[in-house]
Length: 345
Ligand SMILES: NC(=O)c1ccc[n+]([C@@H]2O[C@H](COP(=O)([O-])OP(=O)(O)OC[C@H]3O[C@@H](n4cnc5c(N)ncnc54)[C@H](OP(=O)(O)O)[C@@H]3O)[C@@H](O)[C@H]2O)c1
Image (cartoon, rainbow, N blue to C red; front, side):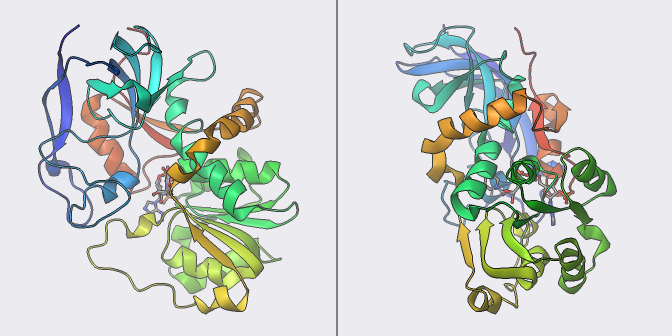
């Protein structure tokens, strides 16, 4: 047991607008020797997630502290324990945690990770459909939207990690599901594989008015539930189509994460009032206690093939910045994950 030498990705400066490759740097990094209660892990998979962009804004107070330039970037990781000073974990165990990503080796708190089992699902799935994005999808749907059979659900960012699970859970609950995504391939997958009723390529629609028309056609009975991942013209179009007592789960606003000046809000917020609708934002951590219920419901659906998931795999720690930046250009199809090392040492 001792410190472990490897590499990690650091930010050289905080991005202004869309992040660019020159802002990232790979450097030597040593994972410290674990103290009591800690584990040292060899990273196998790491996650890139849109929320990380928010941590690159040191000027804005948020629900999670900003990154600093003197420490590696951080985030979700699946790793194999190589040294343990926590009684619940042994060498060779696989764990998933929200911290310790963006590096080859990490020293993490045993209390902050959970064991995962390769026999249950591919290890990378614990960063996606069975991990934080999966819990996000399931909680937004079941805790906020609370759909009733026969209702219409609209999902933006529908071919992504969160959105693709929302769509499929929606279908399993007997809803009409309309998804929006940014390419014909993503839309074809949504309709043919994920079973959504209509997939709209939002890039075919130049503004909120055009997207509203497409949404109204795809949802002839109006929208009862909207799972919001994108913001901007998507929110405006959804608000134009909501029914009385509609529910909106405000999960993400990815179209706004790289703006350098705030965008005016939707011009039709009055529809929330006029339709007695509810819009609720949420951060998945408030539902962490429901993780066992989520896993108990979604893991069997996955095992039975009733839920499908896609991943965009980037090979090598050095490709993590590319994977991250790709999130804001729609380059990922399903969950974006980075393979850092082999599943088995
Ligand atoms: N509230 C929470 O606790 C929580 C937790 C996890 C995620 N989220 C949010 O949920 C959303 C989805 O996250 P995810 O991890 O599942 O990511 P993801 O959907 O797998 O990846 C991001 C996708 O967003 C789309 N996108 C990027 N820029 C866009 C733009 N300007 N306009 C429209 N679409 C754009 C792209 O797909 P297209 O090809 O379709 O453009 C891209 O593939 C994000 O807003 C994220 O911040 C929130």
